[in-house]
Image (cartoon, rainbow, N blue to C red; front, side):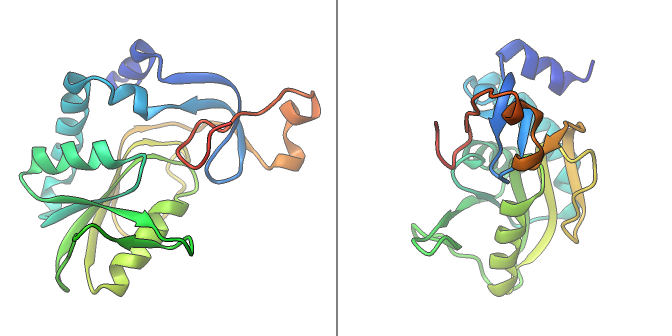
Length: 190
């Protein structure tokens, strides 16, 4: 078994049930990275693995979407010896760098995310960084749930690549069976 999957299983971070993902898709499996990052030694081990994968891109900073990937971005930046910052959603729903975070045009960054299914949040952060004149050297995530199908237009590195079955809400067999769905991610708990 993959070392990352072992850490997920050991920490209770693989959830089974009926979930609404951030993308709006439904799934019977949820990878709760927050459970992995509950323990500093696990965070350090995972981020050391991620740093090995992305150090070749020579980034000046790590940027992660808030809130889910803040700890991953922080520890990854620490492992790489470079600053980390996070993008937050404004009231209009768009990502922005706030809290005094600044990147100079021409900076080279790695975008860090916990779990990618469709890559929507990462694509929005990349769009923000492009508008700022920043070069996105690579994306790195703990889990790529797309099975390698997501494309960010830059190199994409993952610690664990799996292909978890997802469903559009109107085609979800769990919904049709009347099983209540929960939304455990950072965009609203149920």
